[in-house]
Each structure stands twice: as C-alpha cells, then as structure tokens.
Image (spheres, helix red, strand yellow):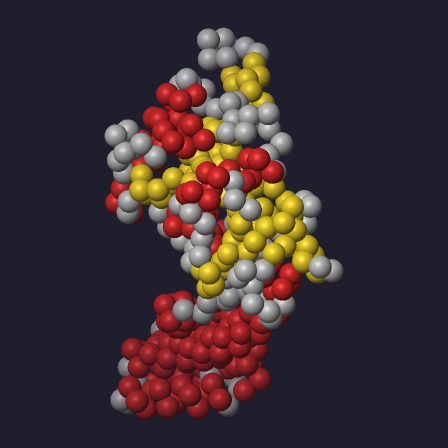
Length: 416
C-alpha cells in the first residue's frame, strides 16, 4: 500500500465517523483558537503601547523630581528599620541650562523644561479644559511634534512672556470648530492669548491626551500660571539624545549633572532619569512574560484535546480489530498498520488546527472591533498553531498505532 492510499484510507475512516471526529477535533480547535487570540492580544498590546511611547520621540529622556513629596531613605548604617524622610529639591530652569551645556552633556541634543497645569480655555461660549504646557521652543523638536498650521513661538517670545499659544487639534476643534484657527484669540484664566499654530494629532499617549493641549512660552507660564514661590521651578525636564546610539551616554551625563546640581549622591538621589527606549523594553518584557503565561494556560485545552484524540484512536483500534487482523493476514506489515493509525490521528489534529486557525482569525477581527484594540494574528503564530496541532495528532496517535501494529493476526480474527 502506497502512502497516498494510506492517506485515502485514513480520510475515509475519519469521515465515516463524522460526529465522533468532530467532537474529537473540538478540543484542539478551541485550544488553537485560544492560544492564537492570547498571543494576538499580547502582541497587540505591546504594539499599541510602543506606538504611544514612540509618539513622544524614541530618543526622549525625562528628568523628574519628587518636589513637594517626601522620599523615605533607609538608614544604611543601621541594622534596624529606622528610616528618615528627606524632601526633594524641585527642578529649575538652572538644571535645564546645566543639562543643555555641551561641555558636560555632549550627547544631549536639545533640552526643554516643562511646567504643566490644567485650566479652562474659552472662545465666546465654547470652552475646553486642556492641559496647559509652559516650555521653550525646543519642546516641539524634543517631543517629535509637528505643526499642521502656523508656527511655534520663538525664544524672544518666550523670554518676553508673549501672550501667544500653540494648541492641539482637539482643542482647536472644540474652541473654533471648522474656522481658521491661526490668528484667533482665546481666553485662559481671564487672559487673552493669540493662537499662532496648531499641533499635529497624536491621540492619547502615556503622558496624556496630546490633542488636548495648549503650549505657551515658559516665560509667560512663569508670570501668569506658576503657583511656586520660585518662578524658575519646572515640573519636568525633557531632553533629546543625539541618536539611539548616544542614548545611554546621554542618560549617564544627565544623571551625573543632576548629582552636581542638587548636591546629592547615587545612594540618595532626589530625582529620576528615564528614557522612552527603556520604557519600551521594560513593557515589551512584561507583555511577553504575560502573553507566555496566558498562552500556557490556554495551552491546557490543547493537552485536553490531545488526550481526546488518543482516547478516540484507542476506541477506533478496539472497534477495528477484525479489520486489522484481516489486513495482517493478507500480508500487511505492522509498519503499514501503524502508519495508517498515525495518519488518522494526524489528520484529526491537522483538521482541528485548521478550523481553530479559522476561528482564531474571525474571533480576532470581531474582538478587535469590539474592544477597539488591535489583535495581531501573525503568520508566525498561525504557522506555529498549525504545526502544534499536527504534532499533537501524531503524539496522541503513537500509542494506539503501536497497539494496533502489535496485534497478532490470529487473535485479531478471533475477536468478536
């Protein structure tokens, strides 16, 4: 008997018991679809988060402070749990100037100190409550933003405290509708600002809604919105490394500079330096681990499906003992008998896997639309799912096939 004839015989045997075969494939089908959806959700989450982070610039470095909050520092010289509370020093424009010094920080390309608050903006009866960002002209490059209309403010406007603003597209639509925006005026905290530009749309990022923003000069913010007794105080300092290869060096330079500026040591810093790239890598590792864990849980159903295939094949061997005996009496070798049952089991696994892939693709599209979140069904995951289903079928069929092959012809023919 040729291999093609063996496959044809196995297919006839599988299709001859449609209900049993369908129930046998059900476990593999559900398992494959579950694993595909789990991997798809994990990859979708990683892509979504990475996309949001990269909207702020892949070379972005952020210096943050614990200003106005206490840090608990363990007493390293004591074996007890006694702690002391130390209040951090807020970030200032002097810190930003030191970080922008090319002599001490040659790998930092641009620096943009940032202060933020939330207030209501008005244009007649229309109103919006965006975040107000006070910064320098470097901000637009550091955050990788572009403008769809108008221009960004200049250093002279920032130093002079000019009443100009660049707004996000969401705020522009809310306040001005479809009218031309550049040159229009709006009111912030009772003060009139002229809109000189509109930012591009970036949607919601990890730092907030980038479309609901009003960006004003740092000098204007300090004079009109700052609540600190020190008008040089800023919330965060954003920096851009020269390139990805310089990112680590730029972080080290920024950290060393901040130690000097705040007169602190590595053992007890009062600031933190982080990068977008590090955040991407950390989140990628976490989502990979979580996806693997959930895939392992979903894979249990594959194990159950494999056991189901083995059970059905054992039943099939028992039901077809006389057929096996007759074929062996007519000269069929044990290897041929074993091959036939292996092909039948593999066919069940392969068909269950193919149906599971189809279900996973359809369910992924439906789920993606339902939750407005990407579910990525990759070619690699699909191929792996199909290979796993085939392996499950083969492994599950080994013992039944071996049992069928070792039957003695005379004993098989005597079986009732």
